[in-house]
Amino acid sequence: MIKRIGLLTSGGDCQALNATMRGVVKALSNAVDDLEVYGFDDGYKGLIYGKYRMLSSKDFSGILTRGGTILGTSRQPFKLMRVPDEKGLDKVEAMKQTYYKLCLDCLVILGGNGTQKTANLLREEGLNIIHLPKTIDNDIFGTDMTFGFQSAVNIATNAIDCIHTTATSHGRVFIVEIMGHKVGSLTLHAGIAGGADIILIPEIPYDIKKVCEAIEKRNKAGKRFTILAVAEGAISKEDAELPKKKYKEKLEARAKKYPSVSYEIADQINQVIGSEVRVTVPGHIQRGGEPCPYDRVLSTRIGAGAAEAILDGEYGIMIGVINGKIKRVPLADCAGKLKMVSPKDQIVKAAKQIGISFGD
Image (spheres, one colour):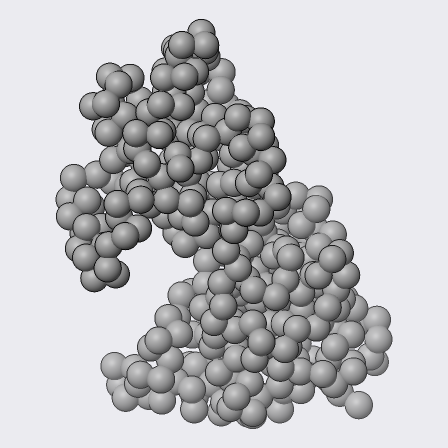
């Protein structure tokens, strides 16, 4: 019997997308005699507009170590999925028609939170869906780990490591801005691993006075420099108390003066204690390059887990990792939920125990 599956990668790219697709296809190829794999170009866009190609085993050879995605990706906001395109096309209906046209047994979707919400929508529409959790933010509910996270931690940590030598040489305050709009896992892990003195994340609103006190405490102790790891979504206590609409207006006003929150914090530190502050933004470097060994192993396990679920005929799930084990998590239980850093997490407690300030 022929097994037909579709693959698509959606949202921001990361280092282990190819490794995960490879895991799915290699595991299925070893289990079934006749396998057809269709890859959709540029995420949901390919599914909507019928842009796809049949893939062979050669397409999955040599991609374990390749970053990015061989299929291409794009961002298709979930909130617009029910909105017809500029030509009036019903996107959801178009995706269903492409699925049925190819007689797919299952569509395997790799992506983050927004991608997952659309995957769940397609599940509700009756399609056989399996979601694989990709994001450098490690913020997907229902799994302890997402592929791409550890590779990004390694890169962000290296950025902080590199800043250490120049910060020591010049005796300055340095801010390293790490990706993470809503969730601070990447900043937290990289900050601890890189030896940051202050870590600011969205889940723990900061008091700029407390931040400055932590810098001055180091100065009085004879420390020549201070390094702050700041999530791009870091928020002050004052801003955290604003209504959503007012905070949005604040962000719009800030954007006219500062490139990001890190530059605002740098200016405030300079105004309060007169310290010279430099800002470094690794940006999309954190998404790029080859996956680290940890992610290659994780992706292989998740891919193989997806293949096993397909063979079992179990769909409407995410393949997650819970307590070190590969688990099948119902999409209905995790779609639309964010996994945040809790201020009471043991890792936060440990960071505070060794003297890292969170500005709170």
